[in-house]
Image (tube, rainbow, N blue to C red):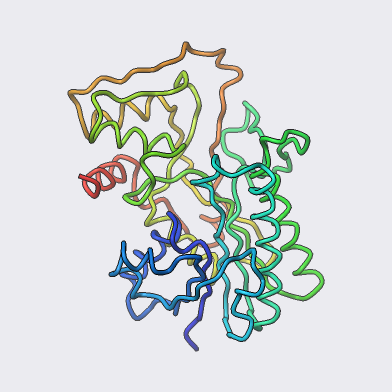
Length: 317
């Protein structure tokens, strides 16, 4: 079988770093990777050992003229979206980047005879998780309120998924959707809106570990090595026209998470919860049902959260 040639967008962020580190492990079994990036030089300077694993094209998903229209790819893994820098983007900018960027990449897939297209989407497309639902399955058809401007990211991801469905129906392009939840790993930013990253930062360098809210929100975390394995599996083997949740189904409250990080990394530090506990009935829950990926593709959570935290901490000491 001919070696896959994958065009990767979002290759310099957390997901891209996870995928490139997975390539280091995979060696000759790995697909050929070409990364589209606005600033390949900066990534090469910071991660020369990872940059050498891929070919690079300087371009921007929003600038059609910068895209590699004359190249040929067997697969496209479209993960570009500034989720880490999202708060610094305007709401319209966030929406435009996701929706227009996805459409440009879908057009590129048609032009370059790409056979399969994996969109990195988000569990946010489901909207608010009902209290009675322990894990959100792929056939739950809730959605974020489209009239709430703060839902720009989630609504844009839902729109991008719909674009994929349209291109599949109209042009026969094989489409797979990865609905991603929450993650942990050495490359997760430590000064962004990711609670576990901030807890690790506090445990390693702060005086105490601080929970900004009341700690009752519920999340789950998949290690970045499992994330990379899952994404490559979905890209190559996911069912055409199917969406798969990507994440862990082991739930934990944010307060419990902060205490766990403290116990594992800095047992002498205190945990401070800044807000009073809310009514438990309105707490946020964001946990996927991953039985589809488990049963149809054999994907598993192979790295437990405790081990993932220890590895991430050790990598950042």
